[in-house]
View 1 (cartoon, one colour):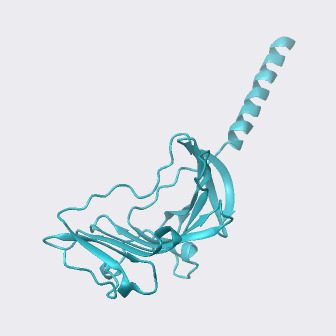
View 2 (spheres, one colour):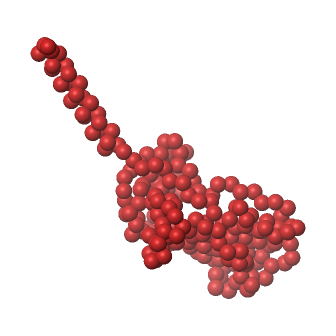
View 3 (cartoon, one colour):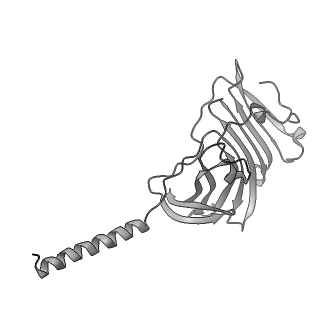
Length: 230
């Protein structure tokens, strides 16, 4: 038979386990997101230091397996319009085109460079959450309820929002259903604090993200852009 003191010790132990269990439950967070390196999307970058000024809008296409990428941007951050495409799926020699000009609507007036490529190198596109990233809970951004992560890097504070296990239907608001299966979606990225004078806080919204290889024709440069031979 337990003595009174022993019973008190057992009750104390059970109470402590109960409290620890609830504390740990409160700290539960989802797994870290993993974004496909093959994708298409649109982005909007907003300068938070200047009260929400849109600085650039982009279309991004990337297919490392097929060895091709494409980026088209409009805004003050690129001083007008800009297109960058890299094609190593063209044989026997690939190419990289960079074209741009101050008038996004008049692409025929842009300057263009065309360089030959014998190979294309591919670094990870998406920022991987560092070890010191902490889960900050659910937050709605750009009208989407997302998981928010925050971390520090080189004295600056960063944030990332994402959704896990999305499907084609829930991402695009269509009725096609989960034909792509389940995938993680990047929703937004931000620099929320910087101690450096003159540096800006900003956030980047990602829209229409699809983790599939775009058609090859989507990587073609607008025929209005006049580029010299590589």
